[in-house]
Length: 475
Image 1: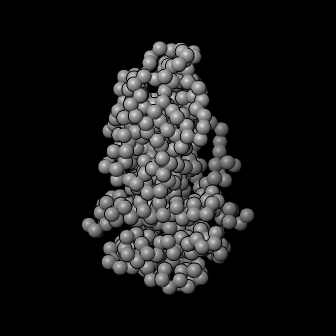
Image 2 (image 1 turned 60 degrees about the horizontal axis):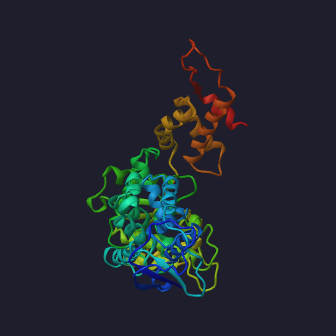
Image 3 (image 1 turned 30 degrees about the vertical axis):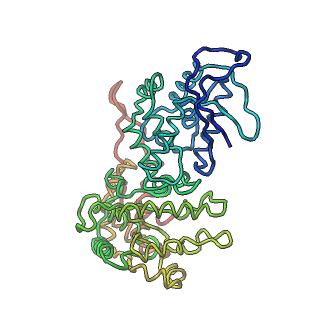
């Protein structure tokens, strides 16, 4: 436990060693840091600030020490917020070191179990401001790192204010950055900061990718997408489960849904919603300690529920939620954690799985099965598959720098359907096109032709024909 002694004045004289009998003047009050009132992250920042103060041999703990400790924490929420605001954290860190080195020298290391640290009135004001921000602005239960960060920026004066202005770290921008890091998370436990931005960490925003034009166009699945939209607008059992063999395009249908949501071509009740792809495997990765997976999934669910219906989670391999996270005795798996929210309609999920996995895992859990409406996805016929390839043609031509003829697309569908019997259309036909283009690009790429010095190289376009597809399938 650290006990801070707040001084009403602070000397600006630099001394290598305090004079005999030196004591900071006008001691005003004492403040004790109680660990139970702070998150682990905030306590770590205060400890790091004290260590940094002693390392630089300063007389009192000041605001700059606290801010340096936050900026120096590479994996903390403050560093994440600064990254979002495109602030050069390393340069800011160096500027803070220069400010700190201009402060008085001469304190020895505190001793004893209850350490006493001299703290400036500025730092005391920041602590008080942070508590106000915690209780009134965010309505959090504990004081966290981001409360301290906002308080420092709002209370900054003098040289520190000039340094922050130089890096465009203003109160308004900091609130934006902190809200993007936190999402809808609240500080309710000492480890809450680890759950900040769980949606951003563990999901991919398909609606945003659609807005950026990074999703492939979807054709031939209008009926299936309409069925998904219809299910999402239901009052109960409004969680679609796409069931189909691997390769039939279940994920593509969800991407088509994201594109419709982004363009606004959806019923009014779905306007403004976003589709976020959640990977159970990513949630599990690195979760070594008991309760770590549950904390991550709870953070995702809390943020999704706090969005007031704005977020739809897409869980590929839906069957993976059954049993996920049950590595330790007494822990709940993902399915059991999600059931109550699904039952109350507080969480919307679109799942995708195969018929075998659906029967093996989902149907056996009747409580989970009741929360979903199955939508069966069939393999497209050859004509539909050709149309799907034509929609994708431009993307593959641009990527490989080739020209794909209609004959090549027809051959890819026809020959893959005839000779590749253990996979489904359109996936196996797309793979043939991709492989044929990659092979031609490597084996048949001609040397660059330069018309005149200084001009760019001009390469003749490689043409992928039906013969290229036939040659590949015969290998």
